[in-house]
Image (cartoon, rainbow, N blue to C red; front, side, top):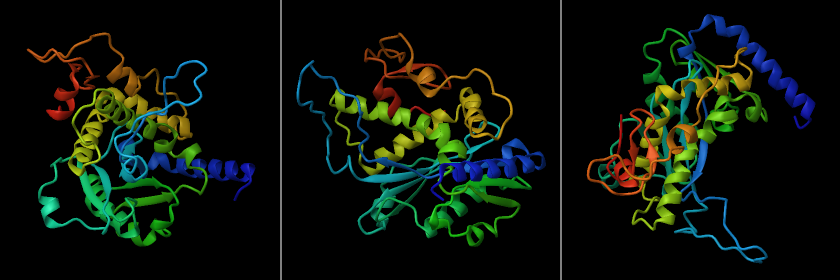
Length: 301
């Protein structure tokens, strides 16, 4: 299906089918999940250059880390919530982690860790996500409507989801996710904002932290997941559903991650006796924090 008209018809039909089912479900129980690939070293696409300069150079700490990715898989609800922990699939050359590595990983209760040789999910890892993220997250729901894309690793979805009690999974048609998958349409971009800011700060200030290390990736996504789960982002998440066509009414004026976390005038950290430059404003407590007090000290709510 390559014709733009056919793709739009497919998208419209799917949205119509989903909207017909929505009255049967609570908004908390209508979910969307999606895989998103990230580079081990997220670098800014923006550079500064002198006028007329023929060659502009940029810096990364590891060329290998800037070209090798891993996968995150969040889940959101129609009610405007981030649901369950985020799945983090790391890239391991052998496709496995030794017990020694596992025992020394950073511990975060809002991140479920797995791995593969490519850093991408496989059918068995989708089943791992089902068992360790989806099922625990919907345990209190009598019925759940799950929207997910047509990625081939899920097969037809029946073998993976048919045994999930009370869960109806609907497959978003191929080539339509940019139009009608809420995570693709708006949320995933917002999720990556904090990651880019963290990597930029580490590089620009030459902070002695290797962001490509496993534990630092876990720490990073635990903090991002925590920040974007704040109630202040509920309208932003509902907007992703509205823009995808599943809600009639615009949720109203909302703030993005940049608005909440990075638009402030204060130059220094709020932490007592800390004179470091500010980095982020917490989406829960509104404290202005330096990089150390946010990332290194692991600022969680």
